[in-house]
Each structure stands twice: as C-alpha cells, then as structure tokens.
Length: 291
Image (cartoon, rainbow, N blue to C red; front, top):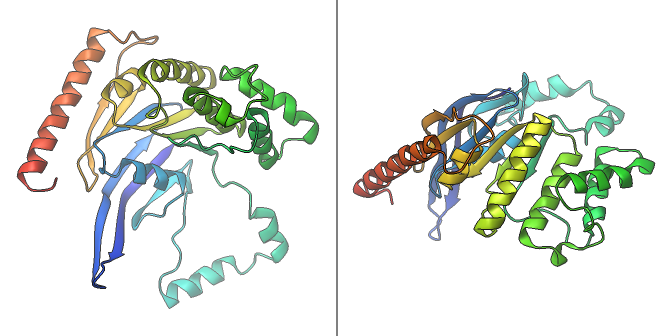
C-alpha cells in the first residue's frame, strides 16, 4: 500500500537580482494506492505529476507531508533546527560504523523507477545492463547470466543480448529499461512517461506488453502520462492533476473488463470525460492568467 499524506513540494530560487522567489509544484496531495493496482497520474505539462512520482520513489523529499509504503516512511526529513538535530542524533547514536556499512546500500523499499529517457548504460550490451543490475541486487555470480537472459526474453529481447543500446530501436531500449526494472524483483514499479519518445505503433505494442507483464506479476504500477488514450487503456484508476500547483483534481475508476479493446465505447466515453476536464481546466487557467 502506497500512502501519500498532505504532500507539498515548494522549489525556491534566487533571481538574477538576488531576490528570493519560488514555485509550488505539488500542493497538499493525499491519496492511497492498494497493492497490485495499475494507477495513472494524468495532467498537463507542469502540473507536478512527475515531481510527485519522484517523491513517491524517495528521489525527492517533500517540503511538507510524508509518504508511507507498507507502513514504512519513504524518506525521513533531515533535521532543520538544533533541537531536531539533537533528536536525530539520539535516535541513531546506537548505529556503529559496521552497522552503517551493512545498511547503507540496503534498499528501504522494493521500488523500481523507469524514466522516459531509457535509463540504461550505453557502454554495456543489453545482457551486461541486466547482469549489472542483478549484481547490485546481490544475485549469486553464477546465476546472473541465466537470470538476465530470462528477463530479456520476458520483454521480447531474446536474440538482442549482445547489442548495445545505440544498436537498439527506441522501443527496444525501453524494453531493456523494463527488463532491468523487473530484475530487481520490485513490488512497485513507477514509470514517468516511459513511452512518450516512441512512435504510435511502438507505443501501443509496448502498452500491450506492459499490461501482460503486469497481469503476470501482480505488481503495483504507477504511471505518469499526459496521453488520455494511454491512461484509459492501461489503468484501473486515473488520478487527474490540476494545472500547477498540482492537486488531485479527480479520481476516476476504469471499470472496463480486461483484456480491453481500444475501440471499446466505455473507454471512449471515459476519454471524452477526461478531455472535457482538460478543456475546462485550461480555459479557466487561461482566464486567471495562470498559463
């Protein structure tokens, strides 16, 4: 279970004239995502959905609020005052250097993150990319190659093991990123517009592969997208973010049986509802001078 409680993210900046300024990317977002669900965050560019996803992953700390996964806090805020610093030291003073070295690289949560820009190592082959991830996971040396081949085959990359990312198409590079994510055996996969950089035909094929993998593994998947068709085809639920600062505008259940047909009238009706929300928000944001 993922639980976000009143999460706000404020970015402060210093202008050229050295005056302070800032912007609120996410404003008081609270939501919960049950295990095994496929949930999409949908919203216009700049609405804070990617920032919120990174907060869920623990890649950014919220300015206010907190995120819990399976009863454990994702990030504990660093102390900001002397009193908080003293409390922090008291809490962790029992940890010896040996204990610190043991726990330093131990992941706190079973999360994998997949980005839009094919987060793979260009100097490694497809096989080496997955083997390296398995090494970080602590898989036994003698099992890594066989495991890597299994994950590559699972995403349709059997036969491409010796190719470098530059020799792969955009869709194949994203499959490689998914294979790396699966290899760490996460319970949660977070995806930030993973198919935005590929053509429509490849995108739809990758979406179908993702639905199949999700059905086979039962993992929780949270997807950031601005593509209405992608959201309604893939999701159990769609969380619609308002124009920045991002708040939860709507939560819509997608109660359409799987496997789904993209031409299903129920999906088309839901897409039309989402498009109407988009138009309304854009028109009112324009009237208020927000865009």
